[in-house]
Length: 210
Ligand SMILES: CC(C)(COP(=O)(O)OP(=O)(O)OC[C@H]1O[C@@H](n2cnc3c(N)ncnc32)[C@H](O)[C@@H]1OP(=O)(O)O)[C@@H](O)C(=O)NCCC(=O)NCCS
Image (cartoon, rainbow, N blue to C red):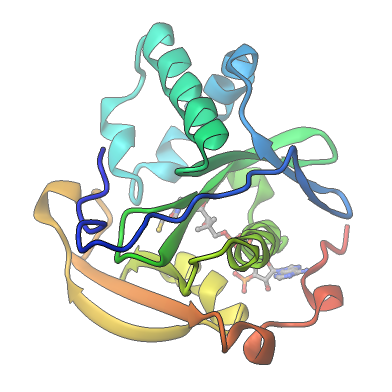
């Protein structure tokens, strides 16, 4: 997918992707194509958990070579600094996947996430998004970070709410990107560079407690 909104002359953000981001037992890092089996297991074990909200689940299971190709693309994007898709690991186990994407307005990075069902309810997505937001603002040109989710996906909305993002808009979603649980209204949450230090939770409040 391209970045259709980065067309008004502003330069895209170039992410200085680190080897990893860590906080306590949580680790975020670029997926390695050699981890395709672990990645696949996490997806296939959670299809019914993910299906209501993730449109790509309709295409599962995909051939292994497609999955490898996707992870290789993510690794290339990370090297080039255009996008960063990360594995989310808790105590070394695959908990899910997340990412920082340049697919909204210029100067905006969008966070996406999903967790395996057994890793929900522990603050993993909140902490991962906290780390990704901190990292996003370390990169020149990042003016705001956004999180978008369908209005029916209340658990997804809890993540930006806990992090001090503001709900700035509700608008009809792209009908071609609908998932089965979607109501069809996108909730758009945003935090600006200036507001992040004022509104973010303190790090000890988002650390995983187990
Ligand atoms: C969206 C999704 C990642 C949210 O997962 P989640 O477990 O609700 O979010 P977190 O990992 O941040 O955990 C928050 C929960 O853990 C609790 N929690 C426990 N310790 C916590 C801590 N240290 N910090 C924050 N929350 C903590 C919170 O109270 C909250 O529980 P609640 O939902 O009962 O209020 C998950 O539901 C999912 O994968 N859904 C399917 C895919 C999807 O919808 N992706 C997003 C598409 S837009």
